[in-house]
Image (cartoon, rainbow, N blue to C red; front, side, top):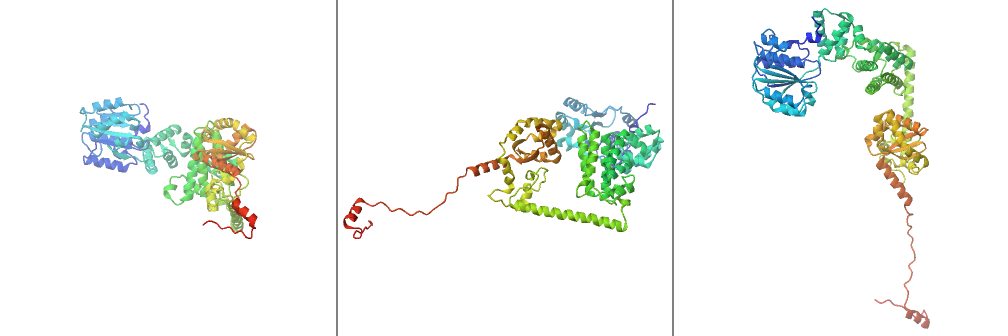
Length: 604
């Protein structure tokens, strides 16, 4: 007889055989016992959790010759034929290959005919989310009010893709991932019946790799048993799945802790020499540091530690890392795991990820605790080392506080910070960003009435350089820079095209963006470094990238032109008032009689 896969041979035949779905099983059995069977059900949940098996079981329980009963007897003619799949009134439809409106119209036309072999006609539609919108619309009325002899059971792994009108017409049951303990218990039962010798660690590893899917666990058990001749051990599981043992990752973690890049690369090379795939190694390494983080954060939680094969070994390794260091390592590994999906050189990215995680320890906050578990110095030597570390940390904190005070004073006077053009947020968190300027200066303006919040003080030095010869050359070759960036990474090019060269001064190119989101993404350190590298390759010399918003740059230009064209302020002076001219006959009278005898009176 041909070999039948374990997951097929051990497909549940009664509700009691379904692992990990107690509430759902109980609800269905109560409904069968009390004859409160609905006309439509929706079973949703991850793959391999028993949705289709439960649908077949429900169809058998409804149509059992000794029922409807909480459990099908599996002995009557109807149960045996439904197990074989030869009853024409129990129809299983694969919606992935019968997804059109024509198939659903055919179903709608045939559902009105009464069953010929069993009590009720049952339609099991698997992967129902694959139906088209037109097919859903055609099914809608029939699903809401089917004939009394008909029942629908819909199964899907993606319930969010179903129309709300379909979901509202069904009783919905959400199948959960099978808990680790129930998976192991079920696997032990299968191994006893099949005569397979197992180690507890091997079954635990299989259950963990299946991620809550019982079908995946049985398939993996079948594969390992075939590989090892019915001997399931932890090492055999690792060999079949292409994973990496935790002990090997422990050596890699030790290299990261010691900042030993050579040892870290040797570990990676060892994985590759053993035939491990980089993406599988990256996935396993993420799980390893996830376990370290859980033990570091919740050391006494039994729910966490029982999923780990050797908790004591993990505790020793986790003691050498701070929680912040583990968070940052996981962030780095997750980032490069996403990049590996689109890379033709996954091994290179895996090596870069390990080196990046190793170099994080150069930060002031530290990637790892210098004192490692059992190797921690004791007595006076340990006390002096701890005191030295504490003194160094205090000195750095004091120095940072002094620098922040000096920078705050400079910004209050409207003076630009030296070195990098930090006003343009080259790394997205510059001390001279608008939000921090507002916080440090209290929203005040610098001398001359220029608002610090708009970064006008930092843009002034670019205004006079916007028409320089070198800037014109950069604008001419900017399309070549964009092409170079696109060749390196097309996603960065998509963000960069929103920026326009605005000015150039002292080896710094200013880009004006119309979209704040495009600007912020371009400013990310990795993207900024890639753009600067492309500019260096095209233009022939190193250029620093700075950014601003287009409206701020326009305001700066208009402000500068107005200041240049503004006339000098008009000065008001007091001038003596000139006397009004006199009549000619008055002058003649004064000439004849003399000024002493002539008296002039104004008309009233």
